[in-house]
Picture 1 (tube, one colour):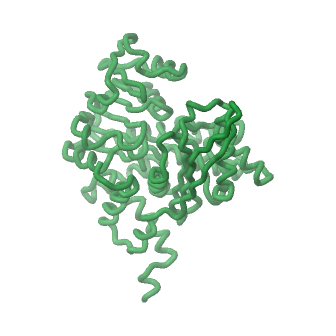
Picture 2: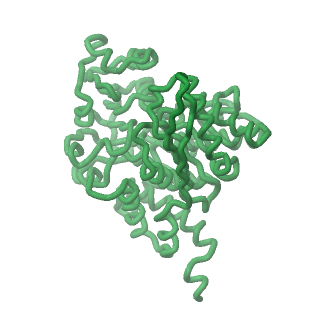
Picture 3: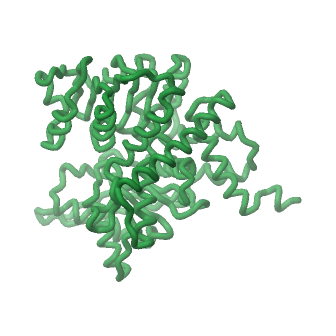
Length: 421
């Protein structure tokens, strides 16, 4: 990537979208900066009796359209810049899906794999103790993200309830079902992307069955592989942080998921089930129809975008393709279904959970799936049509779609033209 912060690179998308809309300069000024970012140090007692501190952040980027919404990640490389960028993306993601939310995000700079379960709980509760005045069911609603899960969300919701003195399940989404979680939340990110590809398959010129490569085999990666394989598509390659495997005739998805459930890498299945070991960095260049980046930011960049052989990239990760890579992919006629649309199934079902918590009435799994499908197809179709009508990329069309909604809300409060007229 060229020089500049991660947020600087993300803001390029804002400028690109603004060029296709007649919006007031006030809108861009408001969306260029985070509304508030809070940094703290969490001090917890370790199992050996020592005390250790961890940097943590919570960003509320923009709340024009409603309370901010966004996950909390536990990762050793987390930074304030990353948190603000993720919150910026969430602002646009919620607007893309027409959810009554703004964008937020949180992180702790920690490798949770090096903590005991008791230390992990203490850290999770310490996060809520530090940020209890910032979050709230009507102000800022966290959720799981990288290396956090439903149990951690349950600890956090419980800690918040103890602080405010009453049950408040709507403060956090992605909770265990027994604590007010929603059916369908576990595979929502992947399922949204699955519905999108299925709905646009003809428009995208995709044949049947598809050959699919999945980069990153965590929650989203496993579920998209499972859903597509169940439809008869062939998963030809997958990777995780420790390696990759490849099989042109198709990988055994069940064997891969079993390995992950046992705490092993997908690479541990090499040599059986017809799986061949593959260097993880080679996965983006595998011969396939659909490439699904499901790991971290900037995984497809200027140095490897030219090797992509897929017809379509489905971004289940946040920010996996850099702006420089986008230009290369466009020249090579590779279509990208962008993160703020493709992985928005997660925040959409989180919204469903929040609604159910507030009304005290819970929907069936079939109702969750149908509501998600309708929203993904509706917004996906609108964005696809915008891309075709304006002759722009699907990514830019998604930002145009979101920015139009954000602009309407910001302009409704009055802009320079209103005050000087």
